[in-house]
Length: 378
Image 1 (cartoon, rainbow, N blue to C red):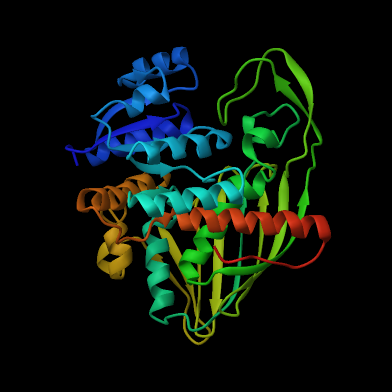
Image 2: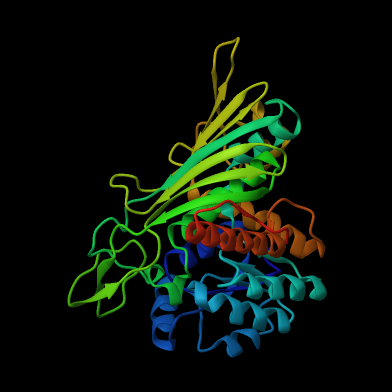
């Protein structure tokens, strides 16, 4: 991978995760672009990489073939559009854009260019999620009947907690659903192989007024110093009922205000022949449920897993693979396609990113009307 050069837009929490995964993979990181020239220079020095002064400067660098977009949500659309126009492959954090109109345009543009264009739904690449998907495809669980779970966090549980995602013009109309719920929705559709076709959603803002710091605040960082009151309209939590294309039913909840839950993403799939369940805070185990035999716990071990799960694993059994490892596995798949000039793996495409925005549109409409809303096909 050392003959492929990459650049990263964004130098915050997730940008540094991308950088670490690329270095581990052996991809040459040409530089980073910060939210300002000074922040970029400071973070570049701390991370040991060059800092670009502008997006134009980044795209003018012939050493860059792939650009990673980890900037705030509102910047994704114009940045991705410029990257594709410059003939560079792109890997964008979710959401792909702020609206489905924008994501649809980017999907069409990417298709015309023939470039590799991926969205970072990294949780697909926990090895046991790949294993579970293959189990469903092989019929090990039988016909999928019920899909349940949640994604709960606590980092915005207090009125003094602050992040740019709280403001709709920066993060989008949906917050708990858009920020973390879309990861859950993408993952269960990936595992089950069934698209969500309709939703009945209830959104709630438990903290309608928060204290915004006068200065910048990094993601997950504690706030300090002078603050000002801000009215909040984005969702702290949500409950959503789901209908799937294959006939399955589902229910999920999201929360960024659940004390003690740091990054608790769980799913359970109940099929006609068996069940399976997984949790992000114990990612190396998969629970397998049976009616007429003892239940099982499968530990991530390539020698015990199917081909899909084994291929996603990097470490021997007993050596836990966590959040950062999913980016290594995701980027390994993407960069293999960049090197081959094709797309043949199971990472999320711009079509998947557009589908998530259409699903979010349906959630917003359902919450406003209190009715079931059909999710259009991308």
